[in-house]
Length: 469
Ligand SMILES: [Zn+2]
Image (cartoon, rainbow, N blue to C red; front, side):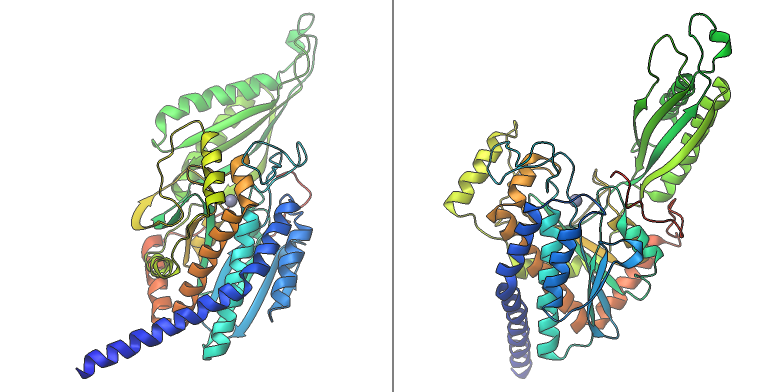
């Protein structure tokens, strides 16, 4: 009887605590929803998210966070911190847009400005929901005297620029105990899925121009170098692990058929579920490129591009996120939102049978997925977990005009609140139970099994803030 009573009291106290965190989220949801919409209305490409990062910095500063802007050599990278000592829990925020995907919030393909960037990956929601959660966590820590530090990391240029890698190099993750983040999706989902490690860059071949008919013997074709490289890669394809992806385009193959091309350029990417395995494949790709130069008597130069590690899932943090999402719950569409989702569904061209936003998909499913992200690199240096929240209508994939329309709509903002509720409940759970943070570290070591993070981005490399992403 006594025991039962104690359990009942503990459960009631836990429920009251959960309600407290969720009330803080609710109190700030409107404000951060507006921030997400303002970022959506002003889409900025990677490393150029000046207005977007300023909006988030301002909202966090006015809620009592100490903001450091322009960290790790990137004007739009920032940290926002509250509290002191351990554990140090970090929430990641992204806010970069995609080129050419400008879109209104109507369920039909209609650009605001044709050719301009758009928020087709929902990063306007990603950055805003994590900030909303950070504020709610801070208020709960204050209310209950919870020990530790909550930080928000504003991470630029996820879409190819790899802002997080420069933040790792700058030591910003060195004292961090756990990282929680999320991504917009078409379902509410927590599992142990990973992402593909990716590496890529530009291969430039330099030859000797000559008249292709009058003096071909004097020429050395840069295009030949590129084509020998790519043929060698086609042969290589047969002898790499099944899950490997190698994709490329010839971005310059010469200018006229009667001139031996003095210059040729190939942009190539390779992916594999495991970053270490990808390293081996990559060294063989480099041999193909060298073979191209050798056989054609041209010179090859390589410029490093995007290099992201695969996500290392964390069993303990995924468990914490799953519990949090069960308490957070999904949401229902209004009749207008239902109509909006149905209209979008008609544009997808395939029948969509997916759970709606009221459903939760919580499992221990593993898999490599098909995308790549610099969250992967973070997950090799700190215990990290991520989940999806239903900000897009069922069936809508990222990097589409449909996703950009959802990211500016009320369903985007409702999904964002599911994300914030889940993040806030999970982080408070970790602050309440330091043993869970320790268990997450052990789960992290177990998954790494002695392997270490490697990257082709040199420690002293300057972020390519003026490049194209
Ligand atoms: Zn994304």
